[in-house]
Amino acid sequence: MTAAYETIQTRLVGNVLNATFNAPPMNLIGPEVVRDLVTLLEDLSQPTAPRVVVFDSADADFFLPHVDMTKVLEYTAEAAKAGGPGDASLGMLFRKLSQLPVVTIAKLRGRARGAGSEFLLACDMRFASRENAILGQPEVGIGTPPGAGAIQHLTRLLGRARALEVVLTSADFDAELAERYGWVNRAVPMPNWTSS
Image (cartoon, rainbow, N blue to C red; front, side):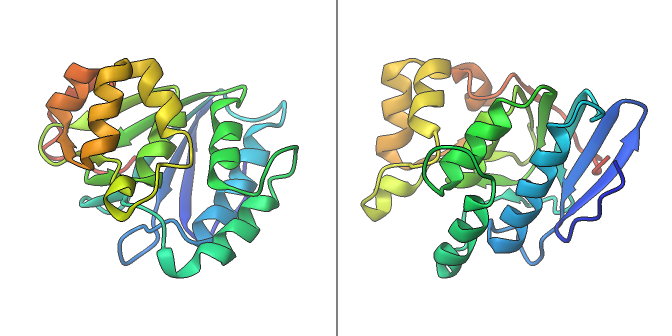
């Protein structure tokens, strides 16, 4: 894979693709990130694609903190380019991520809230930094339910009661509690963790 992306830095090591989000100032999911994800997911669907992709962030404080609320129409238009049946939404795009014929791993440091958390939930495995990983689904706090797969994934992984706790409280969860609940595979110490 040699494709160039505007907001995702890639590096192929053997049969593992490292994909690092780098969309300053804080990695909000906007049209550029969605455009790059649509292209990357298409590339990863090819028979010659790497067998494993590891997602992380160039920003130690923000993995994907949420969507850019000022650009909803623009990123939705980009998501529609992913094709296939269904609506033009991040939920449809993240469903495509969860169905890739490759193993998807997320290395989380910083904040992943709302759609950022839903991106992580669409990955096969999630590992979170004990030092600074924060997960949350804040949508109910602004009067709307999560819309890109959180309810389904959280219910499957955490069970109904804990999924309701996450969604209805709009609270932030650190890596250790997220691990205990089953939101992430493991909370690990990563004091000097740099993007791969």
